[in-house]
Image 1 (cartoon, rainbow, N blue to C red):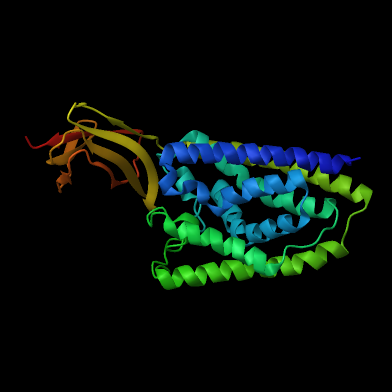
Image 2: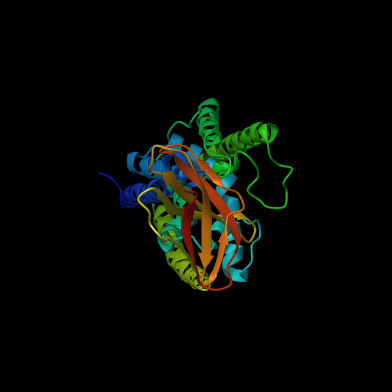
Length: 330
């Protein structure tokens, strides 16, 4: 018979898998498969820990918690700092507050508050099993970093192309990628090497397991209050909307998504398409309110070409709607 604590964590595991599925669905539909936004370690850790909790695999659980301690601790600290001070500490969570970040994506991003508390509590509650071998753990993490390197450099998935912390532009390039991958792999393996015997020596009694689960439930109530404060912070950020105007049967322009390009700079991504079987030169027209401006460089579109384009704007100080259109040479 499965004890109540393990039943509880199995239920949490199903929630994690559903949460990961929702987050992945939004990332794929909003950004596209080729952008890799679903491949961030945090999202992979969310889904993987969900499966670990469902199937009660101690070794894999220790492996994923080790890498979460090596990576997500920075995120959680930065998010706490932002909630309580309104300022960035490391700048890792700034994208959540950029004006174009949709509210559903903002809410889903708060799973970072739960992976570590759930996983660490579960390691003390579940039965002992064989730990994951360090080489296997390192190979899994290195494989994730390698795939991250294949995604566009501007998305910088898992900080593989350059550091995610602003203010250190020299931390970029192939040498950085290799050293960063090695550092995270070694750090996570080292954390697992320390945690494994320590947790085994501090197993909880039946009463201790009950108290641990209750402590986690209190943490959930505390984080609900934190999310409420975070939502209030988010609602104070001016909204940014993108839409297209002047549709044409011969060429088209389509809003895609926005990202934080650099501190206080909004990166707007859109697509342009040539519906005709002949090349053409087009200028992108940006209109905000009554102010209209054309892109300085013409787009040279091949026949039937469908191209991704991006531009940057400073963070808006008030709710802003950007209208996009194309003006092509006849």
